[in-house]
Image 1 (tube, protein in one colour):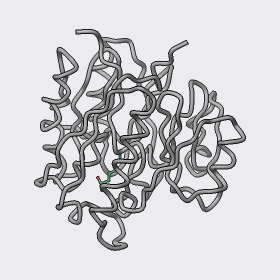
Image 2 (cartoon, rainbow, N blue to C red):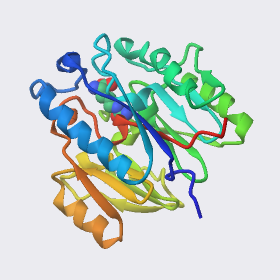
Image 3 (tube, helix red, strand yellow):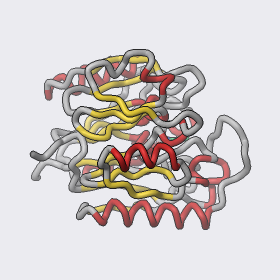
Image 4 (spheres, rainbow, N blue to C red):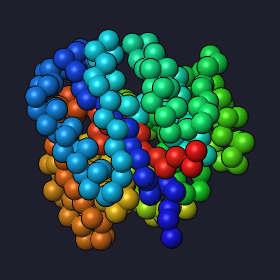
Length: 265
Ligand code: CIR
């Protein structure tokens, strides 16, 4: 049966631009190399397309250095799309910049426009609920605005806490299927995934907790052999994608796309 939380007909991505070197980062480990980033990005898009999905690749937006991380600008559900209200001041207007692209697929695009903040990276949509972690970018007011918007489609929203020092909730977890979550121990140990099956990333490989299930594939960053082995043994169909440049800006697999199946117009 088609699972709405990981079966998608479409994705939206955006190429990194020259300004990527100005992207936000917690720790400076050097500027990302645009050529390498573009090559990883092309591999990423090709993997999504290999599942039969239609992938929109938007042009770089030089005025927004972090705009390659399109996930933070919106939440796309089968019923409708919602532009977020990103918590980093330099990223706030990325959400309105995404609206025209969403309108190509959705008749109506809702907008979080109150005083709260919420980044798409803090939202994990599972088959049964929407989990949102408060973080340096997302606060309870933003989550309340999301809750009231998705209430019309009967979604239940559960507010959780992103671990201290972790950028986004999904930096530390990913959906693998309708009942399984890939997570770091520090996040799963909070009990937030009780009732789900949890696969832990290997100790020392926390940086690969941000993966994506996209149709039949699980995209994970290259360079995490122990977790890779665990996922292969569990029967997942893996595609490893280079993530060295995105990682310099605290980005991973989920950040690079909006994944959705729009309603028929
Ligand atoms: C930022 O700090 O906003 C970007 N450098 C990284 C955003 C990663 N996005 C995500 O995890 N959804």
